[in-house]
Image 1 (tube, rainbow, N blue to C red):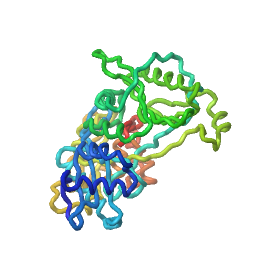
Image 2: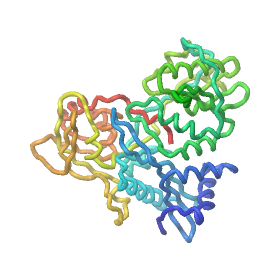
Image 3: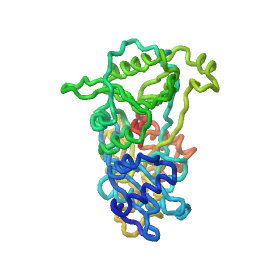
Image 4: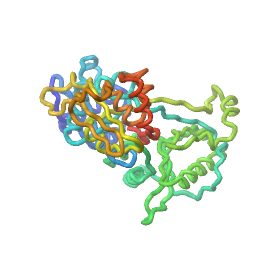
Length: 408
């Protein structure tokens, strides 16, 4: 078995075959897949002269409070039917993460197919994301939407730029290659976009991109992008305008917004529509994960309010067992003296006088980003310390709810 870089001449058709075998690729969508492959790093596992596994990563950034950190986004981990249960996916993904880290990716992130698998690579689960389904006619938006402009699949570059310039908060990700937007839009069937070009130079500022189904829906909103809350309300008013015909729209709840505030009689309509094609309701899933790749550099960009806290961190990183000996990056395991505060830091070393925190990279990454407090992670994840230290960490790491806000 050989792990190597993707070669378009040798691997294009076999990569298509892998995605078809796992149900990711419909006939006629091969070009969209090629844009995904071209968006960043692509590694394959070769067996008997053919690629039988494909791992993709793409460059991006993730916001930590007001700081921007380099992100390695894992956009695809796929294995053919004949190469399952050989440990290939884990080792190939570890190699891709290591190469990203060696090139400066301080954090890696991904969307998981199931909880548990990527934990072996040091990933910790993110927060619950809410998706609401509702009758758009029930929106109680206090504004009126102007007539929008139509967006087409050929507008992928305009759409990508609007995504990059959207309103962002703690934990939000940007994917830097416009090929990913081109691919995402290209994969969709029965999709449409409506938006407003209110930028100083006529740029697209806020829009929705939806998948439609039939005359009455449901409609699925893939993207709702805006730069201000006034623009957000206009998009909601635009969805409301569809309510004379469309009976159901599903939408991921935006950061800092409680959509139920804008829906009239949500419980009544949930009961009335139960078990129908147009069932209203809300669903929560924690489907994305992340890991820190460089503890000192991540903490150097961590600026917290309040009193500083120092402690000894003993960190273990499960990715170590999956890395090839040729990789210079070996994960994040080690003993660190950590300071959290306005000027945070982490340096390798030991100080027996400090309170000790033991954690896996998985759990410490969740703690650092603010997914859950230390006292909660000590119950459900691999993190332990004295009750006094855990309580101090809870006070020090009071962060906004982190939202990736860009699925990949």
